[in-house]
Image (cartoon, rainbow, N blue to C red; front, side, top):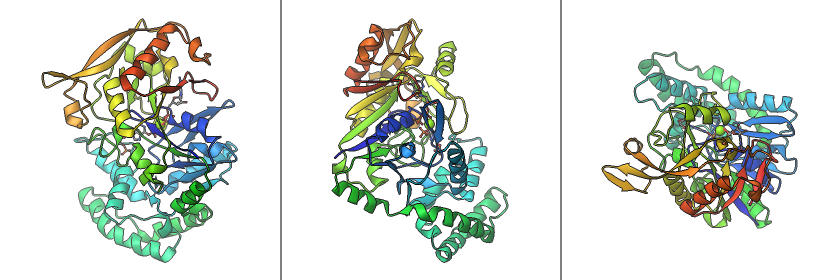
Amino acid sequence: MSVRVVVGAQWGDEAKGKIVDLFAQQSQYVVRYAGGSNAGHTVCTNGKTYKFHLIPSGILHPDTLAVIGDGVVMDLRSFQTETEVLRQQGVSLQNLRIGLGVHLTMPYHRQLDELAEAKIEGRIGTTKRGIGPTYADKADRIGLRVADLLDRQRFETRLRRVLERRNPVLQRVYEAPAIDADALTEEFALYAEQIRPYATDVPHLLMSSLERGEPILLEGAQGTLLDLDYGTYPYVTSSHPVSAGACLGTGIAPNRITEIWGVAKAYTTRVGEGPFPTELNDETGDRIRNRGREYGTTTGRARRVGWLDLVALRYSARLNGFTALAITLLDVLSGFPTLKVCTAYRYCGETTVRFVSDGYALDECEPLYTELPGWQEEITDCRQLEALPVNAQAYLRFIEQYVGVPIRLISVGPNREQTIWV
Ligand code: GDP
Ligand code: IMO
Ligand code: MG
C-alpha cells in the first residue's frame, strides 16, 4: 500500500502535472487536494499536450480514478470549458469523481477577485480566478458546496443568503451591478445535472480504498511558497499546497502517507507579485525564460525567472517532510558557462541560511551565491544519470547535499519518456 503525495516545492509550475502523470499508472486513485482553476498542469505524451486546471492529471489513465478532493474549489463555468477541450482531445471523463464537500467558485467570486486586483495598490497579482473570495466564503461558512448544488431548494436558499452579503459589496464598494439570484439558480440547475453522476463522498471512497490496500496518489497544486500559512504572505494563494494540505484536502490521515515527493525546477520561477530574492532581470533571465518557455499555463503571463534558491528549497523540504525530490527542467540550464545557486541570505546585516517567509521581510533579503560550473551539451535525450554531463551530475549532487533529500527523478524535457529515474 502506498499513499504518495506530489507537492510543488517552489512558487508553482514546477511540472507537477508531468510527475503526477508518471506515477498515475501505478495508482488506483489520483486525487487533487487544493486550489482551483488557478492551477495549470501540463502533461505531454504521444505527441499531444493536455492542460488541466481542475481535473486531476491522472485522468489520462483508463484504470485510474481521477478525484477532485474536498480541499479544491471548483468554478463550474471553467469546468465546462476544460471538459469540452478534453473531450475534443478524446479524453474520457468516465473515471472522474467530485467531492460533495468541494466549494463552488461562483461568478461573484471571480468578479470580486478581478475588481480587487484592478485596484493597483496592494495587488497580489492573482490569476483572477476567484480563488481568494471562494476560500474566504468557505471560512466565513457562507460558501456553496457540491452537496448544496445537488439540492435545488437548498442551493437557492443559501445563494440568496450569500448574495444579501455580497451584492452590497459589489454595488457600494465597486459600483458594479448586483447579481441576480434567479438567473444564477437557473444556470446552476443545469450544472447540477452534469455534476450529479460524478459527485462522491470522497473521504469515504478513499478510506475504503485504503482498507483494500490500493495505491493512492495525491496531486498538489500551486507550490509551498504560495501556502496561505507558510508561504510568502501576503503574496500567496488562499489554500494549502503543502503536504499537510493533502490530508486536509482529501480526508486521508497523516499516518497513512508513505511518500512525499517534492517537485522543484532546476532554477526558480514565480508568477504574480511578491518577493523573489534570486530573480534575474537580465539577459540570463530572458535566456532561461525562452529556453524553459516560461509563460503561464493558465493566464499566459510571462513568468519571472531566477537562479535556484536552495535556502527556500531546504525550508520547503523540511516543512513538507519530503522523502524524495524530483528535479525538473534541468535541460533548460544547458549552455551556461557557470550556474549560480543561492546558499544563504544577507538579512539585517547578518548572513543566514534560514528562509524568511514573511513576504515583506523576504524582500529585504539579498541572495548570497555559490557558483558551479555549467555544461554545454543538450541533455534532452539522456535517460540515465551517468549519461548526463559530469557538471550536471555535480549540480544535482550539490542540491541533494544542501537540501538533505535524495533526488530520485530528473526531468530533461516535457514528454513522459524524457525522464531519468535514479
Ligand atoms: P505544473 O503547474 O507544476 O504542473 O507545471 P506547468 O505545467 O504549469 O509548467 C511546467 C511546464 O514545463 C509545462 O509546459 C511542461 O510541459 C514543461 N516541462 C515539464 N517538464 C519539463 C522538463 O523537464 N523540461 C522542459 N524543458 N519542460 C518541461
Ligand atoms: P500551478 O498548480 C504558479 C499564484 C498567482 C499569484 C498567487 C495568488 O499551476 O503550479 P490566486 O489566483 O491563487 O489567488 O493567486 O498565486 N499562483 C500560481 N503560480 N502556479 C500556480 O498553480 C499558481 N496558482 C496561483 O500567480 O501570485
Ligand atoms: Mg502550472
